[in-house]
Image (cartoon, rainbow, N blue to C red; front, top):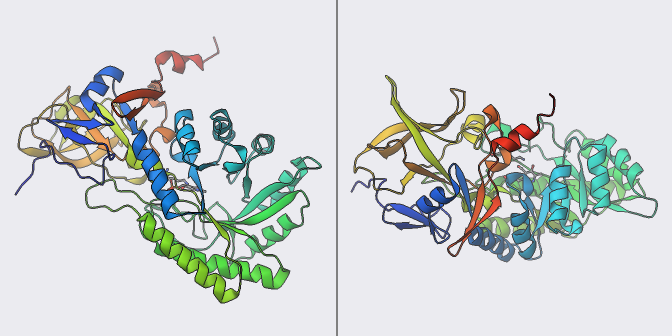
Length: 439
Ligand SMILES: Cc1ncc(COP(=O)(O)O)c(C=O)c1O
Ligand SMILES: N[C@@H](CCCC[NH3+])C(=O)O
C-alpha cells in the first residue's frame, strides 16, 4: 500500500506527543498549526510544554538520585527555565548570558554548572557571584585564575573535564571525546591527572569529580560504557597514586533523537540501567565507592518537543530539480548547512494532491548552501502560500540562529492544552537596526 504524505499519517516518534492530524492539518498542543501560523506569522517555532515536562519526568524516573542539568545551548529562554526548575532539573551553561538568564528565571545557583573551554574573567566572576554549583575546569591556567577570584572565606566546587579518547557523535564537528579537539584534558597524556593535582592543591577550590562529554547525537549506550571503564580506571589511579577519592562523575549529554522516519532516539531507560550497572561493576573491581552521577542532556529534552513552520514563497523548476523556497532557512536552522543534517517535511493546512514529487526545500538567504531539506517528497501540487512543518525542531535551531541578511529571528510559542504563549517574540527590523549606533 502506498501512502501519500498528504494523508493524515504521523510518525509518532518524530512529532511532539500531543500532535494529532485533523483533516489536512496538524494539531499541536491542542491548536491547529495553520491557525497558529496565521496568528503568529511564519517562520514560527512551536514548543510543546507537556512534551518537555513529560520528557523531564521520564528522565527523573529512569535516573533516580542522578543530578540532571539541561544543556542550555540546545535552546534557552526564561519560560523554559521555569518548567525545568519545576521539574527538578538543573542547568548546564557556557556563557555569562546563559548564566544571567538562568538567574533571572529563578534557577537556584547550586543547580547550575558552568562550562567553557575559554571562560572570561567576567564569566568566572559572574559564576562566583551567582553561587553556581560547579565550575568545570577545562585547562590548567584556569585553575589558578579561578582560585584567585574566590573570596577569602568561600570555597567553590569544581570538576575537571577530561578527554577519555573515545570517538562518538553524529558528525565530526560535534564529537568531543577524542584526543584531537579543543575541549578538556587528556587522560592518556597525563594532562587530566596534572589538573586534578593542581585543583586539589587550591584551598579555595573543592574538586568534586570528573566531567566528560563524548559528543552529540549519540544513539548507542556503548560509548558511555567505554567511557565509564576509562573514567573509573582513572579514578582508581588517582586514589592509588595520590590518595584522592572523588565523589562525583558527570557524563555530559549527547543523547540522540530521531529527525526522520526509521531513526531511533537513545533509549534513556537502557542508558540508565546499563551505565549504572557498568559503573557499579567497575567500581567494585577497583574497590572504589560508586560516585554520584550527573548527566547533561540538551537536545533530548527540547528537540522532539519543537516544530518549525514555514510558508512557501516560491516553487521553481530547474533542469536539475524542483526548488521549494520558504520564508526561513539557514539563519533559523543552520544544522543542515553545518552538519549535513537531514529532517522531515510535511505539508500542513490543506490536503495536497495524492501524488508526490521529489523537491529540495531551500531557504530565503543569499547562499546556495541554504538548503533545509534536500530530495524530500512533497505533494506534486506544492505551491506558494503552502505551509510546511518540520518536526524535532526544538534544539540547536533557535539557539544557533543568526540575523544573516538582516532578517529577524522567528518567535517561539509554547503550546499546551489549546493555549498558546509567546516565549520569545519575533525579532523585528527595529530590533536589528537598534544595534547600529553610528551616524
Ligand atoms: C558539556 C556539554 N554538556 C552537554 C551537552 C549537550 O549535548 P546534547 O544536546 O547533545 O545532549 C553539550 C553539547 O554537546 C556539552 O558540550
Ligand atoms: N550544535 C550541535 C550540537 C553541539 C553540541 C555542543 N556541545 C547540533 O546541532 O547538533
